[in-house]
Image (cartoon, rainbow, N blue to C red):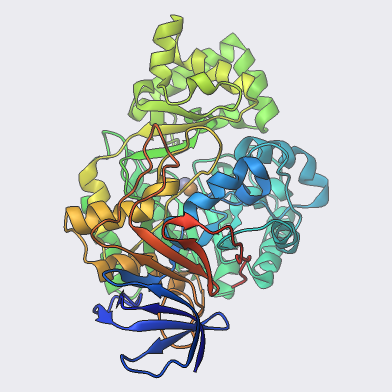
Length: 530
Ligand code: ZN
Ligand code: CU
């Protein structure tokens, strides 16, 4: 027997959640061959010694915003590799209603501006999934990429950034563009119902689109309309959308954030478990941190963003409009999440502001005290100067809520990583190693096999990744070898790209991309169609 690669002497966590077992794992032509103890291996190209280590299917990061990171060129190189260095062999992007496609040609100019604010300079926007795949194919990547279709992008691509319902014709066009993208290989429909322009959609619009996803047997993936004081109402909306459309429901980065919602996972998780027991196909994902990360513009009421970035900047320049925003944050607006009202500017720090590196890592409240000005004015000036391109970190969750979601039997792991230069949230480079180090080994909240299942087999099943997420004969040879005693996240809020410890080897499509913890510079990754 000839093997391209042999991973010898390790303990296999096969991705199904089944018990750990001793086995050697071979690779031939990018596929796995499981070897019983004493099989005669005649010829081996390369051997990896996995003695004392766990051999698992490559991790599937079910929730990323890494749509454009490899398109950033040299600036994105270190960022893009942070994911594979913790063992992630498939990233699922296009989350929270934001993807890089599809759009009608006549809508693409304003969308380029939005995409610049979201993903960094000169990223652009693509008319179709196929165009997106072509652009990705032209740049090297270490691991695989899967994309959902973002509802906000789809809405901007047909209707624009206006705060109004779509006409029947516009809705039909959105359904058609979605249908084409799903046919071409996108993995499902995502919404981000706190973000403009997705937030301008009512429930019936989302039901119509989720019905298209259901026809493709692809999931409806949602960032709920509210993850704070009205999280339970927002969850009921998602459940109704799934019921009315027939689509499977996947709740993104499930959390109950802000002081009014702390502890509410004690109600939301049993609610989801009850639906599953009654036969509904519902799952969620979670990242292992008590801080969230999003764009600074999402801290402002929805009307402030009506019309897109240029309209937002015009409003921010007007003292009267700023006063209205201050008041909206103080008093709330019906149907709006209001992160700052639920927490405070002292819980919000600047993560990425490319023209204001000195502001990165500091809270908006701190900067305001230093300048002797009001925090909303600090936020407004930053947004104007950065043309809307500011990412923040918001310390808004409680550890018991994070643990309750993480240990749920139907929750998988998604970093929600926002890989942008600056001080991005450490979850992009730390999530998977942190779950295995802190929550499995140090706190004992999960077994290795169950944590690996959440990172692999469960995720592959949810997102239709056939032949991935498991170690069995004939499966794709995406593998990770980690030391269960050493694995730990290195990334911190001050140093967010520090690599993890204990991740020895990562294999993508049969090629070694990380060897002894170091990047080999190989790039066998592709965009996968589902
Ligand atoms: Zn989100
Ligand atoms: Cu997200």
